[in-house]
Image (cartoon, rainbow, N blue to C red; front, side, top):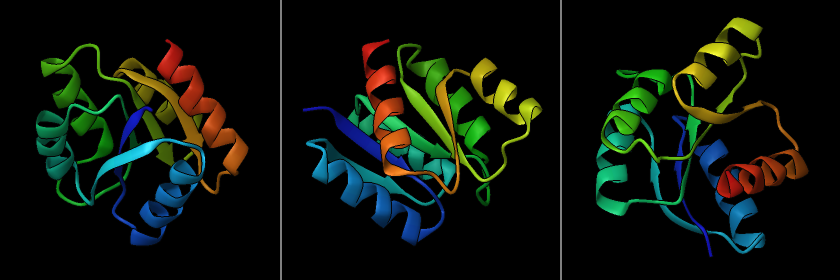
Length: 120
């Protein structure tokens, strides 16, 4: 069972993803509201995968990905954001994101991205 860390500043999104992952036999090992917290939780929990919001207060998702991957190059992160511009998507991928999901997302799209990232 894959262990997932959910990072999003919106509680509703965290709850929605938590429910989706639980229904699809993934274990949610932690949730974070901000990038700094995500980095710390990654160190503590060493999840198999992280879903990361792009826009958060204090530290963006891109900054958090870079910090996590500098310490843990094998980290698997999927970026989730309402911003779907090509430039932002490319920056996320270049920062180490395995995939990019544009909000609002559908359940199948999220599960497919999780499965692809875990196999990579």
